[in-house]
Amino acid sequence: MNAAQRQRIIRSGWLKKQGGMVRTWHRRWFCLNNDFLFYFAKEDDSRPLGCIFLPGNRVSEVPFNPDEPDKCLLEISAGKGQSRVTSNHETYLLWATSDEERQKWIKDIRRVMYSSFGGAIFGQSLEETMAYEHKLGRKLPYLMEECVNFLTNNGLDVEGIFRLPGRNLLIKELKERFDSAERVVFDSEEVDVHTVASLLKLYLRELPQSVIPADYYQKFMNIALRFQSAQTPDDKHKAIFDLRENITDIPADNFNVLAFLCKFLALVSRNSEVNKMTVLNIATVFGPNIIRNVSEADSAELLMATADITQQLVFMMIEYEKEVFVVKQLDTVPVGNLLDLDPDDSTIVLKPTSLNLMDCITRELFGSGDNNLNCQNLNQLSFDESPSPEDKPVPPVRRKKMGNRRGENRKVVISAPGEELETHFPVEESPDPENQESETTESELTNGRTFMEEMQEKDIRSKFELLEQENKDLQEMKVKQDVKINEMRMKIARLERYIKELSTSNSVIVQRYEARISTMDIAHRTTIKGLQDKVAAEKKSTDEAVKRVMILQTQLQHYHLKYGEIPE
Image (cartoon, rainbow, N blue to C red; front, side, top):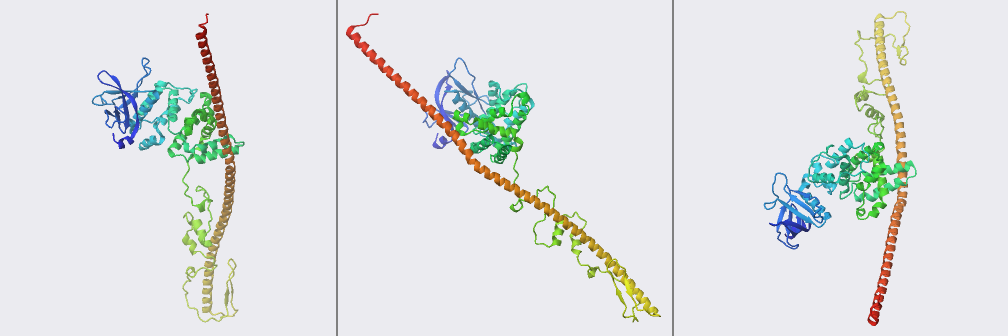
């Protein structure tokens, strides 16, 4: 095996392999490299004695044999449709030094065999598991969905769910089936509720990182501390709001798994009168499975010290799951429009513009095309009292041309609209019939023109009054909008004040947490030192006692040499 191949080694170590005609055990150095398991006579050999091709085969744990209690055996056998693992071996029987080492070998070998088919999920990171599930269009691990669906249909009313253990042999069998990329479907006649619940807990417990990654551990623990030390409902509401704002920062797959799990656990807690599992009980069980620090795996004392805070955090997620797990929408609103109304609000908003009043009204009122008036009609309107030359009525053709009139000083006075038309003529004894006819015709024309002008003026005034009413409505809407803007500004100021208060109290909470950890560490160190001193003192006392015994034995030997043995 060259240097490049050695760098790709997944696992290596000493195992005993059974072989030969008499099936004897031989100690060999095994190396798991890509799809092959190589074995060598010595650790530094470059040429292997043989290799095992793993994909398509199966690996399993050999059951415990009371006649050989020291043997921790694992077997590599042929897969479906095959009769032999290699041309020379039907199976390979390997002997590990301990059960822990055997489990590590089985886990790594299964990862090589089944990871590309969706298997080896126990002990596999959530990211790797979801990389395969995404190819199938799934948003959650299959095992979690199958367990939750079974427990929802069969386990909500079972007393002690998630608290009572399941059957160990059945749990191990189901684990091997899932690790072997088998899509197991639970049957209520074959499995029980406690076994499925224990399998779900085992999957979460064996994740390399908890559902909430360790990078976010301190942030969420601080939130749980604030919730735990809250004195008023407002303080608790602030902590829940902070949790909702920060929970979406974790990876999307972790968020989906956490939201799905907490929604199901909330459903379980609603049946606590029957199943005896309250939110606090469920939080105690699932706390270490949902969030844990990397250092807690090696320190049981640290795990116990932070158990109450972890419990409080999971309690918040389950009790307030509807408020916490809210998916954030992408904010595409420009900065200048942050104080605008909601998109669902139908209120018309007046915005600053460089247009004149008529353009503003046209654009705000008739831009949608719902009104009877349109922009073209508005452009034809004018606020002048006289109509445009194009709109003046065309006078009828006179029957006769007007001649010279005897009353040239005759004038026609048109009064204001709505008043009567007055005409003043000079009084003459004998009017000319031709002039009388022409005067009558001119009076009729003037009468008709005045009537048309009056109608157009009324129409314009009615439209102008309508526009004035619309403008008044817009002004009222603008006032209402200003009130809403002021309310939004007050809310923003209140939020800024809350943020400031949180920032000032954050340092105090962190100091309390650090002081608590420091106190526990000092107590731990003091206890250890006291035990060490006690052991040293006892050792010293023992040494002194041994020295005295040796002195007495020496003196007794001298006495025997000098005086002989003392008779009994």
